Image (cartoon, rainbow, N blue to C red; front, side, top):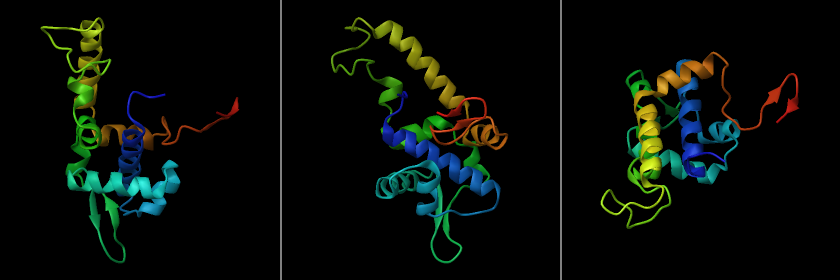
Length: 155
């Protein structure tokens, strides 16, 4: 289980797939994205719509159209992708989801979680879509949870 919602996981993976395709000067359609990140197409459509509205990804209609990122979009911090999908609760909310938790009235996890939350926030604000994409292109990471390790087989 990841730290992001399922919706956010699909959104991040979609952005990274679109970024990879854009590096190859390709625009990609929803069906191709869904197949490559193992996402239900209808669910992904809503996510892509939100990302497009937020200016995280771009789309072009018609023949040769599809989703893409330009060079400036590659400088988008990952935190902006997360906020576009899940809002900023990950960056400001209580680790237990409690409404009353605050600096003045902290829950038992408040101070420890605040430290973790701040570290996560800093990492997501300082890592761009382009930096993450470079690592993917180098083959250090895959966009799906299921991968094959040559020594161990499918995970």
